[in-house]
Amino acid sequence: MRIMTISSRGRQSVILRLAALALCQAALAFAQAPSSASGYVGSNVCRTCHADIWLNFYKNPHYKSIASGKEAPERTGCEGCHGPGQAHVQAGGGRNTIPRAFSLLTPKQALETCLTCHSSDFGKVNIRRSDHTLNDVACNSCHSIHRSPVPKYLLAKRQSELCYTCHATVRAQFDMPSKHRVNEGFVQCSDCHNPHGAFAPVWRMSQRPRMVDQAAGNEEPCLKCHSDKRGPFVYEHPPVRIEGCETCHFPHGSTNTRLLRRPVVFTLCLQCHNGAGDFGTHNVGIPVASSSHNLLDPRYQRCTTCHVRIHGSNSDGFFLR
Ligand code: HEC
Ligand code: HEC
Ligand code: HEC
Ligand code: HEC
Ligand code: HEC
Ligand code: HEC
Ligand code: HEC
Ligand code: HEC
Ligand code: HEC
Ligand code: HEC
Image (tube, rainbow, N blue to C red; front, side):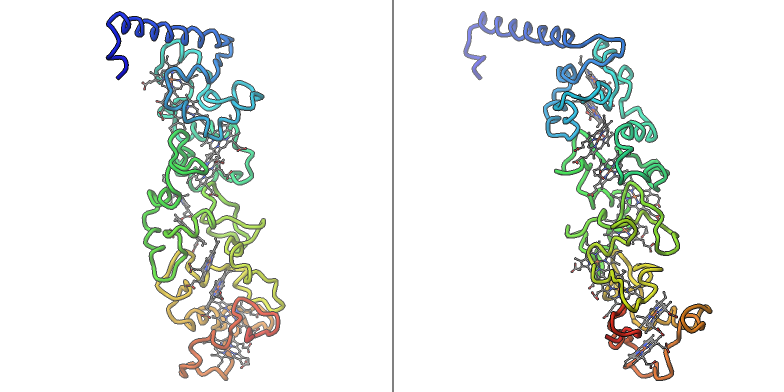
């Protein structure tokens, strides 16, 4: 080291100079601090003691408020989240001296802090009544402002790993033989779910929302990718739109092919096609297969070998082509 090679006098002067520098910085910090009644001192002051956080902060999207120089003090930089820092700086630190030390906040208080700015984001309009908020899973359970290991959205972990920390059972579903490749990284939980809460779905008569997001306003998210199932078809198969895809498919994974809920197709169809109800085009409820269908004949057991357009057809009311 260079400092070892200089004389003891030289070393002393280096130390003195360092000390002087530190004093100057502190003095500068206080000089910069507009010791106004509001108590905001500006983010530069925090740098002296929280250098680790400050040095990474330029990469944070919240740095924009400092860079622009246009925001009011209560919406700028560190103090935008932690509150006015004057008392904290004067006390030389401490958790109780800063208005919002997240280690002392309840999940509700943390949520309200973030929502002072994020309440107008469209994707978060349902946040207060989402399953997560109602169960005390707040913003900082999923987001890490200062130590995010991922390039986007300040997530505390890679997305699927983040969700699995609390939803361990779901991991196994995505390891089944038929599945969406979430564990492989091709599909993400947030392709189908909005972790900030979703609107009540328009399918399934608004039951069991499960935080399933809606695409294009009011469609199941599945149609973003499986757009060939969107229609509109001349001949709709009503459950596709009304009950929703998950009536026949497991969305995550299944031991059955095509993510089906039943191992054999006809048992799926007969759940409904058994004359149940008294609605529909013939007032006979959901029609039973006509007498031509001999279900003892194995040929008839794979219904979709003939009813190939099971999600809807533009040319045949029986979905045969
Ligand atoms: C003079 C040094 C000093 C300055 C300047 C300073 N801090 Fe601190 N701060 C500390 C110390 C020391 C702690 C540790 C308290 C503890 O852990 O008990 C601390 C703790 C905190 C915490 C609490 C974290 C938690 O949840 O436990 C926050 C938040 C914080 N500082 C923010 C700021 C902000 C924002 C600024 C600028 C306005 C700032 N600090 C300026 C010394 C300082
Ligand atoms: C967008 C809101 C937000 C901004 C802006 C912000 N913080 Fe934080 N800070 C948090 C949250 C939330 C935590 C709790 C730990 C976590 O979730 O990462 C935290 C934790 C801390 C801690 C203590 C715990 C730790 O992780 O070391 C300190 C010190 C701190 N912040 C200082 C600062 C300083 C200095 C700045 C400005 C450079 C700043 N914060 C800007 C939200 C913010
Ligand atoms: C259950 C975990 C979870 C909670 C709780 C959570 N988030 Fe998120 N957040 C995510 C995930 C995952 C993404 C990434 C979404 C994507 O990839 O499209 C995200 C994205 C975001 C984004 C950027 C994209 C967008 O939708 O605008 C913002 C901003 C955000 N979250 C803010 C918040 C705030 C503020 C809170 C608390 C009020 C919060 N989040 C609570 C998981 C969560
Ligand atoms: C002072 C206002 C303010 C507060 C408070 C605030 N944010 Fe932000 N947040 C912003 C702004 C501004 C952006 C940048 C939006 C942009 O990129 O245009 C942002 C962006 C984000 C993003 C998106 C990151 C990305 O990669 O696109 C996330 C996630 C986020 N904030 C989470 C939080 C969380 C969690 C809290 C509470 C701990 C919080 N914010 C508190 C103003 C705020
Ligand atoms: C800190 C723990 C935690 C994290 C992280 C978390 N969740 Fe949750 N999640 C919960 C709790 C608690 C509930 C409500 C209780 C329940 O229904 O299991 C819930 C509920 C849900 C529900 C509704 C379940 C239902 O039965 O209606 C979905 C969907 C969901 N979470 C998806 C996600 C996704 C996607 C992520 C990752 C972006 C995630 N969660 C991250 C704790 C967490
Ligand atoms: C292909 C779309 C899709 C993806 C990707 C997806 N989900 Fe789901 N998830 C759904 C649908 C649709 C439901 C509702 C199923 C129902 O109600 O029968 C659901 C239900 C849930 C539930 C509540 C029911 C249960 O099985 O416990 C949780 C929790 C959940 N998902 C978590 C996750 C997590 C965590 C991820 C990522 C690792 C994820 N989901 C990825 C579509 C998806
Ligand atoms: C982000 C795009 C995306 C979304 C959203 C999506 N899927 Fe998929 N889906 C795929 C891809 C890609 C495949 C191809 C499977 C593979 O090889 O990984 C697939 C395959 C399937 C399969 C056939 C599986 C097989 O074994 O051949 C079914 C059934 C399916 N998805 C249903 C759904 C349902 C139901 C939803 C909504 C709950 C949905 N998908 C949402 C991308 C998506
Ligand atoms: C009435 C039950 C039913 C409903 C509702 C349903 N499906 Fe299917 N789906 C099936 C059956 C049965 C198969 C298997 C067809 C085969 O084996 O040839 C299938 C196959 C698939 C496949 C793989 C083969 C292909 O055609 O691409 C995808 C993808 C798919 N469905 C997506 C969806 C989506 C997205 C929805 C909601 C918009 C949906 N399904 C609703 C019964 C249904
Ligand atoms: C969730 C209930 C449900 C399931 C499961 C279901 N269907 Fe349907 N299906 C209906 C309803 C409702 C109609 C419309 C009846 C009407 O218009 O009167 C219908 C109509 C049909 C029609 C046209 C009948 C006509 O007379 O117009 C055919 C063919 C058909 N389904 C075949 C199948 C096959 C094959 C399967 C299994 C892959 C299946 N359905 C699974 C509810 C279901
Ligand atoms: C060998 C081809 C074939 C197979 C396999 C098949 N169907 Fe059909 N299905 C038809 C034809 C052709 C029609 C239209 C003429 C008729 O009613 O016989 C039809 C008509 C129907 C109708 C409408 C009846 C009505 O009167 O409105 C329903 C419902 C139906 N099938 C359900 C099923 C179910 C459920 C299965 C599986 C158990 C199945 N089909 C298997 C060829 C088939």
